[in-house]
Length: 183
Image (cartoon, rainbow, N blue to C red; front, side):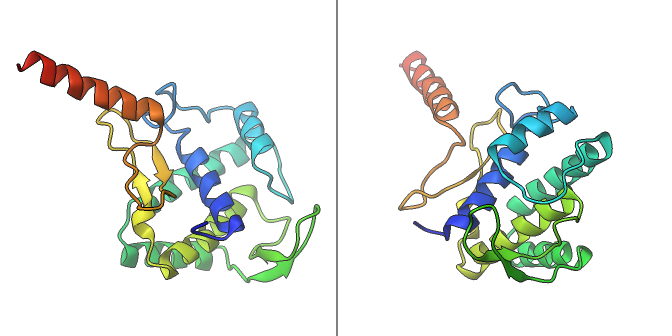
């Protein structure tokens, strides 16, 4: 395991959230346009604390999605600035807590803070680990020309190029056909 389980879990949520954006989603469409779609996403990724399930929360989470997508592509020093800004804007104050059957772990916002703020801060805490370990190169954008999907490369040698097998297969098939016709 490259990162601590809670770090990987937070980063996997960022990937899932970011990949609801147009061009990154499986459908190619924005997959986070309704409160119901946000509710469905949160069924798979547990966030304790306040969840309003309203349009204002959805819009704030969509804004968080865009800010987290942008951090993913920054170099290490620029990522530090972005992470520090997220923590500063949220007035994050780390503390240890345990709840819902989880052992001690870090939170940096109160449970009644808005969901989008808690998402940004939890992602920032995970990104701190990535930055400190000098592993920002593991935060990747899919190399398929028609995809903007994000992924976390947890492969041993850090050589993963595509967000999914589907993108990899598609690019490889295009390359195969191009080689075949050029003969």
